[in-house]
Image (cartoon, rainbow, N blue to C red):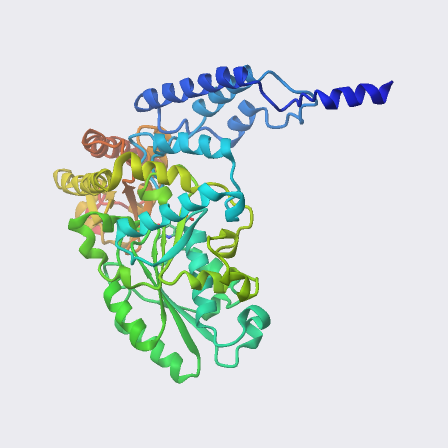
Amino acid sequence: MDSDDRLDRLRNRSAPLDMSPGEFRRVGHQVVDRIAELLESLPDRPVTPAETPNTIREVLNASRGLPEHGTEVGPLLEATTKLLFDHSLFNGHPRFLGYITSAPAPIGMLGDLLAAAVNPNVGAWPIAPMATEIEAQTVRWIADLIGYPKGSGGLLVSGGNLANIVCFLAARSSRATWDLQGSGLDGNPGGRLRVYASTEVHTWINKAMDISGLGTDSLRWIPVDEDSRIDLAALRDQIDRDLSDGDQPFLVVGTASTVSTGAIDPLSEIAALCREQHLWFHVDGAYGALAAAVPEVAELLEGMPEADSLAVDPHKWLYAPLEAGCALVRNPEALRRTFAHSPPYYHFGEVATNYFEYGLQNSRGFRALKVWLALQHVGRSGYVQMIRDDIHLARALYDLLADYPEIEPLTQNLSITTFRYVPRDLLDHSETESVRSYLDKLNQSLLARIESSGEVYLSNAVIQERFALRICVVNFRTSLSDIEALPEIVMRLGRSVDGELRSTEELSLPHSSPTRL
Ligand SMILES: *Cc1c(COP(=O)(O)O)cnc(C)c1O
C-alpha cells in the first residue's frame, strides 16, 4: 500500500520548491514592485544605515537554526526585501562615491532575472547555444567600444581580479618555451621568470604571482613618478639587469588606471619596450579602459590597443550589477593554450566556442546577458555620455574645491578626485611633522564620520604619504547637485571632528602656540 502511495505521489509529483505559474506571477510582480519603490526612494534614503555587525546579526536573527519546514513565499519575499532595503549600503544611491563600484543598471537587474530563468550553463556551446553566442558578441562589443583590435577574443569572468589573473596565466603559458602544462615550472630550462609592474598595481598581482607558482619574489616592483605613473627608465634598467643576471623577463603590467588616483601608465612607451624586448604586455584596465570610449579622453589611453591582453570590468564603467569582469586577449588561441586540456585534434572540428576551454570555470552562469542588454539599451552613445558625465562631475568637484580654503584638492584623473580637510589655523603649517600626522588622523576620523552619516559615501587614498579623501564617480545617478553638496558636508563634519579631536588629545598645535611649530 505504502509503495503504491509513493508511486502515485511520484506520478503526480509536486515538489515543494516548485511554484505554479500563477503564484510565480503574483510574487514576481510583488518583488518587481518593491524594487521599483526602492529605486524611487533611493535619493531620500541614507546611503548606508551604518549599523554595527551586532545590530545586523540581531535584525537577521543570525543564530536561528535551519528551518525544518518551509514557509509561504509571499511573506518570505516581503520580509526579505524589507531586511535588505533597510539594512544595506546602496551603491546605486546618487551619493555613493566610494570605491570603484558602479550603480547597477536597471536593465541589468532584469537581465539577471531572465538569465536565471533560462539558466544556460555557458561552459559549453551545445548546452548553451544562444547564451554562448551572446557572450561572444558581448566580448566583441566591449572590445569595439574601447578600440581593442578585431580578431581579439576573451570571456566574461567574475571581476577585475579574475580577468587579470586569466590574462596573466595566458601570458605565462604563451611565453613558456617548454611543456608548461605537463612539467610545470620545474620544466623551465632557463632562468627565473620575471614580472614587472609599478608599485601602484592592484593587489590581484600578489594572488597571480602566488597561484601561478612564480612566487611574489619574482615580481619586480617598479617605482612611480610624482603622478603615480610607472618610471620607464627604472623599468628598462631593471629588465636589463635581470637579463644580464640570466633571468627571463616575460611580462610587463601597465595599469590604466590606478585604483587609488586614476593615474594611467605611459602605455605606448611600455608597448614599445615590450615589442623591443619580446615581452608580453598586459594592461589592467579594470576601471579606466572604458574611458577609451570617450573621444576626448581616449588619447590618455593611447597604446592600450597594443596590449597582448587587457582586463576590463563591466561591473565598473558599464554599470553592470555585480559580478562581471572581462578578460581580453589579442590572440584568442592564448586562452586555449592555457586552459584547454583536450588534444589539439579535438579543436579542429570545433565550429563554436566551448568556454570551459578558455578560462578557469567549468559550469558558468550567463553573466553576459545583463551586459549585452545594457549595451543595447543605451548604445555606444549612451555609454559615452554617461562615462563623460562621470568624469565631468569628478572634475567639477576638483574645481569647486578652489572656493573652500579649508579643503585641499590633491589629485584629479578620470572620475577620481582626492582632497583632504585642513582646518583654517593649520593651513600654513601642514608640512610640519606633528601637523602632518594630526591631519592624517583628522581625515581618517572624518572619513569614518562621513561614512556613518549616511549623507554621502567616500573612500580614501594615500597621496604622497598623506591620508586623503577620495571620490570615484562610476554612478549614472550622481548629479551636479550631489557634487555641490559635498564640500559643505566635508566642512561641517570636518569642523566637528576637529573640535572633538583637539579637546581629547594632547597635541601641540598652532592654535595654542603657533610659533612652536
Ligand atoms: C577594481 C580594480 C581591480 C579589481 O577588480 P575586481 O572587479 O574588484 O576584482 C583591479 N585593478 C584595477 C585597476 C581596478 O580598478
